[in-house]
Image 1 (tube, rainbow, N blue to C red):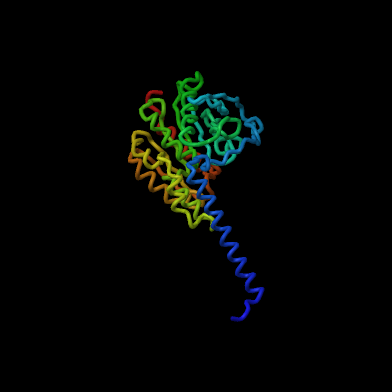
Image 2: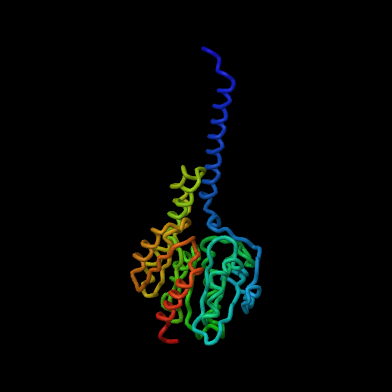
Length: 297
C-alpha cells in the first residue's frame, strides 16, 4: 500500500479534530439545557447605563420584596396630570430597565404613570432569574401597584415585550378576575418556550443537531399559549413585526387564536421590540387603553 502523503493526512486530521470539537461543544450545550437550569433563558446585566433623570423624566426608586424574600428594584415614573392610568412594564431579555426605558419613556407625557420592574438578577434586583421564581417578581410589582396610594385607585394596564410579554400571559392567571386590571399589551411574545428554544438553536451550526432535545429540555410548563386559553375575559392588544428575526411572526397567530377573547392585532415592520419608535404605533396603544378602560374607575 502506498504511503499516505503527509499533507493529505494533516487535512484529514484537521477535519477529525473539528468534528470532535463540534461534538464536544454540542454535548456541553445540551448538558446545560438538560440540567434543568431555566436561568439560561435569561441574559441579565447589573450595570445601570442611565437613569430616567438623565432623560428628563421625574422618577423614584422603588424597593420591592418577592414572596420568597428576594429584594427587587423598580423605577416609578409619575404621569403628567390628569392621570389616565398606571402601567406595569415588563421588559424584554438582556440588560435591564436602564436600556429598555426608551420603549416607554413617552408614556408619562400621555398621562400614564409607569412602574418598570427589573426581574431578579437584572439591574439592582437581587437573586438569579429562573422559573417559577420570576413570577413572584411580577406578582410583587402588581401588588405594589394595587396597594400604592398613587396607583391603587387608577386603571391598571400591563405592557410586556418579548420574554416580558410571554411571562405576562402566564403571570396573569392569578389576576384574571381583578377588576382593577383593564387590559394587556403584548409585544413580540412567543407561544412556547420549547419552540423558541428550538428556533434559537437552529441559528447556530453548533446547536442545530440538538435542536429537538434542547426544545424538549427547555419546555417548562409555563407556555403563554396555554395560559391565554384562560384569559379570554382580558382585552389584549397583540403586536408583532413581520420582520422580527428573534421571535418568528408565526407566533402572533398562535397566541391570538388561543386567546379567544376580545383582542386586536397590530402588525408592524422593523426590528424586534422596536414598536414604539413609531408615533403611529404609540397612538394605537393609547387608543387601545382608552377604549378598554375599566368601567369602575
